[in-house]
Image 1 (cartoon, rainbow, N blue to C red):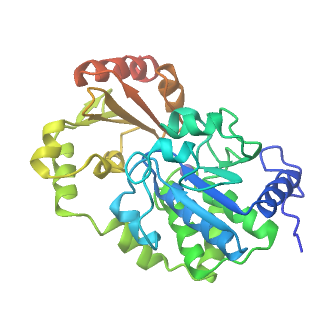
Image 2 (cartoon, rainbow, N blue to C red):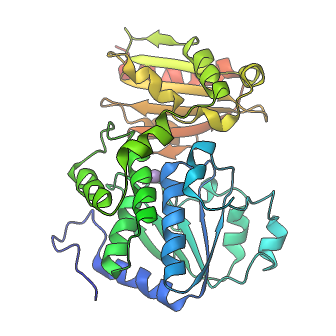
Length: 346
Ligand SMILES: [Mn+2]
C-alpha cells in the first residue's frame, strides 16, 4: 500500500507523481547500477548502501560503483569493498556490459556530469533509464525520472521519503546508513540546513535502530594519526581577513608527504575554523597532484558561496560549495579573495 506524503502542495517538495514514477521504474527493473559523485561523502555513501539493500530486499540485483575512493571513516557502512571505476572496473568493461547488463542506472547525490568523471561517458551512451535522487541546485537533468529537492538537507531524506512512500522496510542497517548520511550533511546537526524535518526523520531512524552515540564515535572520534597531523598542519596556515570574517587555510602537497595522509583526509577539515566566532566565510585550498587547487567554501552568513564557485565552474549550495581552480596556490587564493572582498569588503 502506498502512503501519501506530500499533501501540502508545497512546490519545493517532490510531488507524489514523481515518487510513483520512481517506484515504477524500480519495480520494472531487475538489474540496477548505482553510483554517486566522485569524492563520496557520508550522504553519498549512506544513500548507496540503503538503495542497494532496498533493491536486494525486493529481489533485484544491484551493483554499486564508486568513482573515487570511499573515505575510510565511511567504510563501516559497506559489507564489502565497493568497486572503483578506473581501478577495479575499467570504463571499457562498463561500456561493453562486462561489469553487468543493467536495465536501470541510479545516480545519487548529484545531477551533474562534471561530478561523474569517466562515468559521464558511459551515462551519455547508455540507452538505459536513469533515476536521479539528489538535493543539489546544480542540475544537468541526467534522469528520466528525478527525485530532486534542493530544500532537503540531505539526499538521504529523499531516499527515506521514497522508502516510506513505497512502503519498503527500513532495516536497522539502513536506518544507521540514513542517519550517517543526514548527520554528516548537516555537520552533525550544526549547519543552517538542520531543520525540523532533519530532527523528525532522525528521531524515526533512531526508533528504527540507528544509534547516534556509536555513530558519532565512528565518524568523529576515529581519526588516523596521519589525518590528525594533516589537520594540525592545516590549522597552522590560518589567515584571517576582514576582522576575522573570512578565514583561509591551505594544504600543500608536501603536507600529505610529511604526514602520510591522503587527499581524502581533507574532508570536513574546513569546518574546524568555524570555531572562531567571527568567521562568516571559510575557504580551504588543497594542492592537487595535477597542478590544480581544490577550493572548498563555507558560509554561515549572507554570502552565497555557490555563486562564487559557479563563477569558476564549480557548484554546491549557498552554505557549502567547491571548485577546482588552476594553480598555483597563491593565485587561486587571490582569485577567491577578490570575490569575497566584493561581498564582505567595504
Ligand atoms: Mn548530499
